[in-house]
Length: 196
Image (cartoon, rainbow, N blue to C red; front, side, top):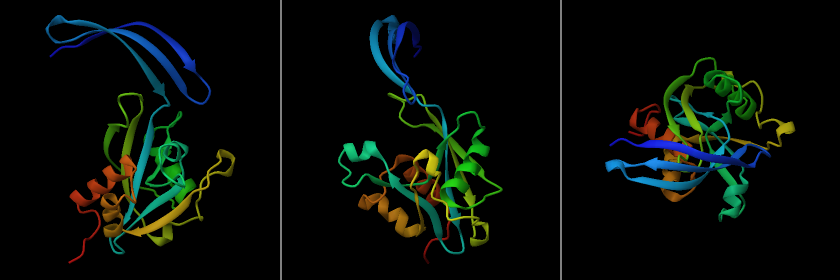
C-alpha cells in the first residue's frame, strides 16, 4: 500500500510557545484515490524520558507535577505521576535525559540505556520520544531535585516500590502513556526483581 502526500498549503496558527500549523494536503491513497484533507499539527520538538530503577530495593523514581491539560480534561488537581522527561531543544537525547534527570530528580546518572523511540501522539504532534532506563542508588543523589524554578517547575520526587507503581496503571494512579510504556518495558524485561 503506497501513499503519496502533497502539501498544498500551510499557515501558522500559533508561534507562542511551540509551533501550531494548519496544513492542507492532497493524499493519494491505495488504488490511486486522491483526497484533500486539512490537519492541524503541533510541533513542540522531540523529547526524552527515563525510568530510574533499583534492583535491590525493587524501587523506581517517578515525579509528580501539575499538568494543565490533564486538569482541563477532568484530573481534579491536575497532578500527574510521570517518569522524568524533557524536551531536547538543541541537545542530543542522551545528554538531555542525563541533565533532566539531575534537574528533576536530583540523581546524577552517568550511564543510561536507550530502549526504544516512539511517536507520542502521531495524530497531532510531530514529537518523537527517546525512551531510556538507568539503574540508580542512593549515592547518586546530588540534590533534592524538583526542577528549575525559572521554568516554573515544582516537581515532587517519588521513590515507589515497583510492584505498587505497576499496579497503579490498573487502578488509575498512573495515567501517563510514556510512564506506562516504561513500566511495561521494565516488567517484560525484568529490570526490577519481582516478589517471590
